Length: 441
Ligand SMILES: Nc1ncnc2c1ncn2[C@@H]1O[C@H](COP(=O)(O)OP(=O)(O)OP(=O)(O)O)[C@@H](O)[C@H]1O
Ligand SMILES: [Zn+2]
Image: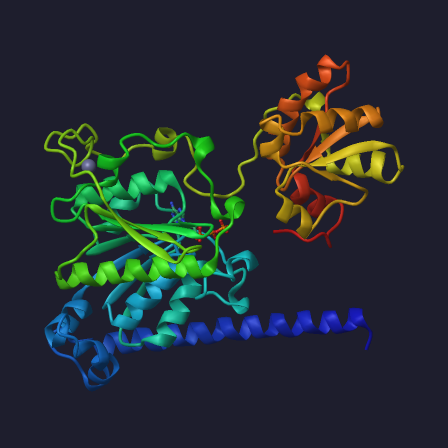
């Protein structure tokens, strides 16, 4: 068997296994529905399985049998089934929260698996909520997992949130944070909010027993350009694991009405130094637009407009340049790479990304920040002077390259040089239209 046949056989087997897993999941669902109908869980006592299963936490003075019953009666909505949602849902399920809702619109991707550890290679391509549900049901058949395969929006938020006692914000964008905050204030639900980026994480509880809400602290959204997501900034899985597990811990304390809930305080985790810090936050703001006695926001608004940012981190293609300053990857490939024409290709991604994969030829790596700060302008001008030909700029998805072209164009013009051109759609477009074997991330 040669290499190609081997690869085909692997793909066929992987496909077969995926189909069988899907069928298995369906049967498990049927069994669960039957069990729910005929063996309804009782919330006034613990069965033998539950006593054994939860015994190690029941013996804690902070929990006891009554505490365990509180957890069993409770319902928690985990919004976002990614880096924070996976660990928090996992610990909530382990601890015996009676009903856990998992909400996410997204599907599992290979780039998720280093940190979103409830998903597996077998669930790549499946919805994240189904993937989480299957794993949690394997862990604990005594509890109920409900899925919401949808984007949380101003239209559906109230109807979903009102069905749960505590809400966990495990999302990754500012617009959804404001939406969740406002909905939780209006419906009087505590909001356990976490975030993680690179090697750092943050955690706090909003709208809990007179504590501040998100808007009390951040009445206006940050400038869009100052916000980085995991796809661009990177994140270490163990850091999301720490924050997600702590979100589960806060949720459990809230349900138990135990002391020490992180309301009015912000926990900062520095994964580089392995250091935790606790900051006291400003108290509830008497003039808060949503949680004060005289709120100005009394129903959910358009949060994407309010924040001037999307409520998802999916690619939104910018279009900043005139057509004369842009070229398709196909035209670049056919007209310049194949023809071997002299040109300068500037790759504006970070150095680590550049090391992962690069276009053929000899692209020069000058990260966008260095271009925008004019740190390497002289170098660029001298490169252009050395090869007085076309300049092209590429990045991962074709947004940063446009910013670079916009910045470089006037500089080149002052030297009587033509405009650089952006490779439309970047490396993603290259993979889709020129080279299907190009590695993508
Ligand atoms: N408004 C929303 N409604 C539903 N799910 C949301 C919403 N906003 C964010 N999410 C989900 O929250 C999760 C955030 O997790 P995380 O950032 O770890 O994942 P990701 O977006 O898959 O990561 P990456 O940025 O690496 O692609 C995502 O699964 C995303 O789909
Ligand atoms: Zn407030």
